[in-house]
Image (tube, rainbow, N blue to C red):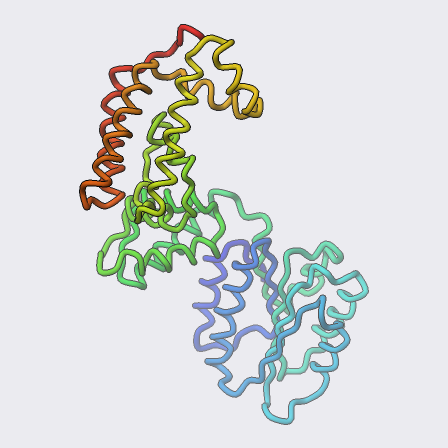
Length: 343
């Protein structure tokens, strides 16, 4: 029997509750997390049916298949049943698969076998020859939209188990950040569950706050977000003490001076152009020319005022930068234009 989706396979296992499970299972999927999840689920059922079963795990690239064959053929001294888990079967050659075929068709009733891997290219007809002897979960042909639905359902269930509601746009933000990698998504969600504390809902703002709190601080990226408004300056929340704020203000001042210089004649800005790599100029120039020289002159004034406040007041660095960002945003609306006189 073959299943090509995790939900149909789990449905099969649910129907088997109270009945004897198959002696042989074959899991083929590209994602290791999918294979591990299926093995874990099945192993729990096996242990429930056979509490005294003896477990053995093998990696094909570490243990020869002949050693697995010996374990199958030798009765256990400590338990009446054995469960052998063999992972990495994509590394087996055609001769190995022939040996596996022989082992499966003559498998002792006391043996349970789980085979797992990314592929079975060395023996494409392996399942066809043994379909009366095993149950197969094959996720190689899973459609992208089916995979996404499965992953979304898994994340929603994971959150529900923790008594949380994962809002759809929060899940979208998480997937956009991580990609459709269930192991990483599951790990991020586990941290988000802790990150949100007693909140019953995980929302998009929680995901964004968590992502940015986990990122290493990038001063230049924050400078561009604040000065050129390339994106919301969320990383302001990562500036927690003056030891971060002071060098950041130096970076901001440097960027403002260079942006002003971009508005000068070619001769006057030649000094800057010789110091910047061509690829950096290509990226920096259109940003600098979004706003008039007056905008950058006022930005320098705002920066000077901030440094005075920093010395006089006991405000947190985040509060100072938030105020500066508000002032820059206000100025940008007045002094923006699409074409510079020296473009």
